[in-house]
Length: 523
Image (tube, rainbow, N blue to C red; front, side, top):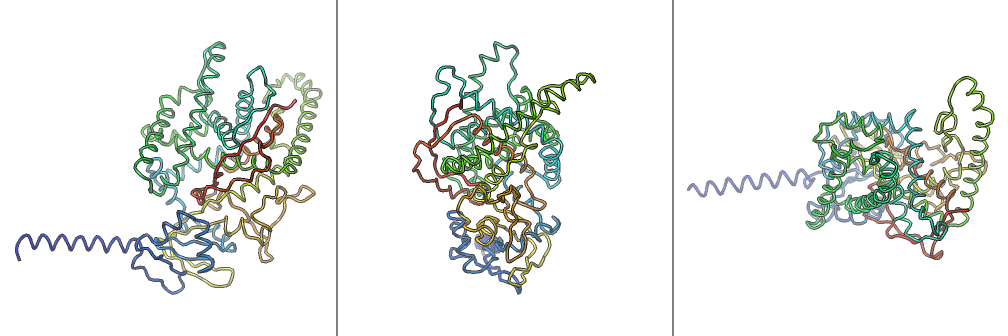
């Protein structure tokens, strides 16, 4: 055999080995073992059902559910589980058996260019649990409330015509308001050396934050494409431009010139090298913004669309305001003199007059918030099978999960839109989660009380550490809007927008389009 024939044979052998290895890796030769769930590779070679899954996720999973039941295996070793009876026991499984960091690491790498080790991710979660829950949370909540008030009222502070009606899109208004307030709460504000410079810079800073929120909205639009890596060259170029824009603003050099950076951000940064910090700031910005902005847009849309809901929640807010006023009067009349006699100082924001929603019961607002998250929180829960394990279904069947497979839970399909758990599941019912007596409702499936009946923030060891802060943001936004503004839809007959289907599975879905409303300061 000649030299060139030898080289050619070697090349073809290597090519064949690579091709066969690739086909094996994507599951082309995978066979279903005894006790394993149904295996559906799809019609298209290699891709399986990938295109259908990405294009119409919810419809695809419903179709597969009717075909195979509550558990199936897709072509890329992904098991989709939509049996609600299995969710509670799975949330108790140790991370050594069901790991949760694989998907997190993939998002950090594909979207933000970060390569995080298991130990780093564990450290980040521990710090986040510390500052976004427990004794540190009220401080963050109070700061967020002040920033929300400031941003809301600053946009109205134009002197002439303060009480005139202003028109804009619900999504646009919510995006800019929540984004700016949250950004200031977490990343601080630019310092002003004197009063004159502060006044002169106020308008410029508001414009800059407006540009920041608009660019973030563009960046967030591309998020599903960046996660999957399926993005055309033109859009990829735009995402790179947006990343550089945010990396510049969030650079270590610029960030630490700002005043009022949250302790959460500061301590997280101490875990990173200087090189990683700027990229990590963008990740923190994204996780603190995207889902809560979309969820807050939806609850405002529901309130505007259904006048009876707006009326009921506004009346509750007004009752709470009266209670807060009475508490403050009691403090001023009875508690302040006693403190002065004992040489203690009473200051605004101090422990005795820091009155917030944490201290007041708002059952209708709580229920409306939870109902919004139930309807629009479509995020998947991703787990990796670290050890072979068995799982028992509601119908008594048992299946074996193979080590190395990915397990994907869909609480939206399995729990949040199950008609037995939530009757008329696709209808917004603001009082769904509360009894007429103001007591939180319980939910059942097959006669059994459920611990998990809605999981917009995940569950188990992978439960979102920012869930309390996120819910407080939503409630405080609604509370302040109803306290400060009259508001109504420009076209009361306009239908509620559908969802942007590309976001299904990636947290809270966003409205497919904006809806115009008008608002003005209340007397």
